[in-house]
Length: 355
Image 1 (tube, rainbow, N blue to C red):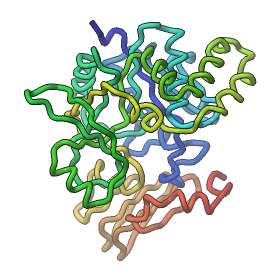
Image 2 (image 1 turned 180 degrees about the vertical axis):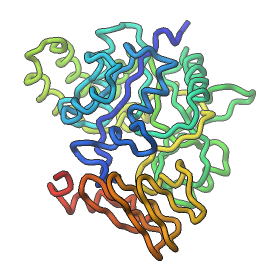
Image 3 (image 1 turned 60 degrees about the vertical axis):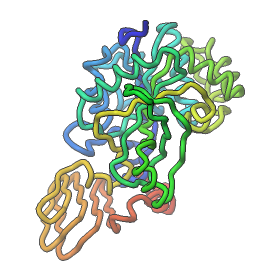
Image 4 (image 1 turned 90 degrees about the horizontal axis):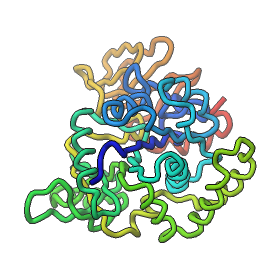
């Protein structure tokens, strides 16, 4: 019988968050900034898990450049639970590397893989969904967390699931669908069979390593070479070239889209992936004219603006539908509906984006 007592959480905090420039940079990336409140996104993710998973069973996957800020923000997490990726290779390599660390701790571990930078409105409903997932993992390869779509969304991947003939907490997964066009997304919402892919997954740690062997054999071989090196203080230089050679691909593409016997729990909580500045409209309260403000903001004859300031006052006058951000000595002004394209700006800035 599977139990929450065997559960380990792996929080993936290795992303760069370029769409939140200038607040998010290589030095202090999106998971480590107080975007929605006093706590950072990473701290809020750990807070949600505290009532479900003891701190000694919470692992944080980070890049080397974020080791210091991560350990400073999470003093309650044991130092050995920070898994430092040698280089960013997307979520398949990240979770494979974490699986090796969990294997050393507990051969029977269940792994809950969780992004560090998402919004979830209710820890209680989150916990209920997790317990349903554990109850439905028996006989399944993995259980995914699917979000009932609140709107036609072209920026998310979808999971098609087969609604059971009788009410059930978990549905068989039919297929994955990458970001659709608007008309297709609208049809998904109407169907009742498609869910947003939250990027939250539950599986037996042992099963995940077997899935690498079956579907990503080259990555599995690399992980097998890394396994005996873990725990050696002088092994970093040996691990780096092996890890750097692993295929750069998401766990969705590399493993899940190839796997069988997947189940999905339709979650009860409100979820958002907080992908760019425009997402703040969905999760933060607005003033009477639809402005979202974090920090000091004076709005005069301004509407539907998103304003963030980490120091000093921002005043908007006679403008609408803008994102205005002052952070780390830099200023961004752009149409709100172009916030999803900020990677292009960061690329154009080059090294100046992180100075």
